[in-house]
Amino acid sequence: MTRLGLYIHWPYCQAKCPYCDFNSHVVRSIDMDAWADAYLSEIKQLSEITEGRVLSSVFFGGGTPSLMSRDLVARVMDAIRSAWPIANDWEVTLEANPTSVEADRFAAYRMAGVNRISMGAQALNDTDLRRLGRLHTVAEARDAFAVARDAFDRVSFDLIYARQDQSLAAWEDELGQALEMSIDHLSLYQLTIEPGTAFGDRFAKGGLAGLPDEDLAADMYELTQRMCNAAGMPAYEVSNHARPGAESQHNLIYWTGADYIGIGPGAHGRLTLGGKRYATVSESAPVQWLSMVSKSDLSPTSWDVLSADDQISEALMMGLRLNSGVALERLAQLGADLDDRIAPLVEAGFLKVDDQALQTTSEGRIMLNAVLRELIAG
Image (cartoon, rainbow, N blue to C red; front, side, top):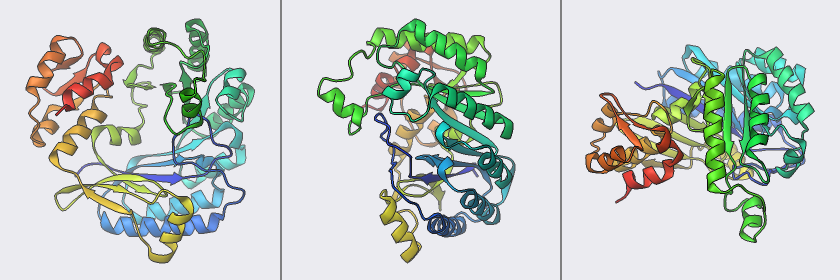
């Protein structure tokens, strides 16, 4: 039986960032007790569906889960431990923003069972933090990171690069600062302009001047790889870097095609039940989701059976993000017949194959979307 993860979506933030296309919302007040009751109801129902499975990771994502009250996190963690057998080395991550970090709150999360923090720093430059719509300063981010380090052995943080008017030298300096601060994990993302976001609307109207061209963005990516490798934090996934053994176990569940439960508004899941693999999705609007759960204990709104072709596509899209690639055994079990598509990509230097896995080369990771289009075409 594959590993099992649990994702819990908290949909609220202090402000909506202009680049964000996640299911996040800003409200004046939150009934923490109502959310606790809803989460506990979902945990009960979904644990019955997955009875006997051992839970190896939990991820509180959002939104800004560090806005959750101490009591809410504690109640959810108690319910989780009661609902599933727990792996001895389980990983429990909670996402946090620097503006919502308090030492006593973090200590309470640690007491509840959270053992890893993922912090949204996003930039180490005050001007760019304002451009990104962030509410914190660099000084506040550094202070929050220090608080997190005092409370947790494992702390990761995110940075966004390829920002407006950012030079290669400026990114080199900023990344150097990040590597000096880091403990064991960094998530380093190129700025992506998503449709439906504030940045997407501005870009469509000709705004967002100063974004890097493809050559500069590629140079920034390659610089990132060199600096992180030299610091002992190589990429294990396109945008994620870790010291050996400190990889995000929860995210590896996604990328390796293991099972995970999604709880909360808009949460997605992948579950193998009765020999079939299901894609689950919950109602995305927070108020409606809360109402549905309180009235009917209704777990994920939709359950769709994934065909073999769907699973092959997912295996490629997720697994080729990893340096370790996609296990050939897994592709064979799914009945994948890709030799004619793989061969030219190997010849072009974008893919490589050994006796265990199909992997992207360093050149292939830069061109990953194009590689995937060729593999999944038709």
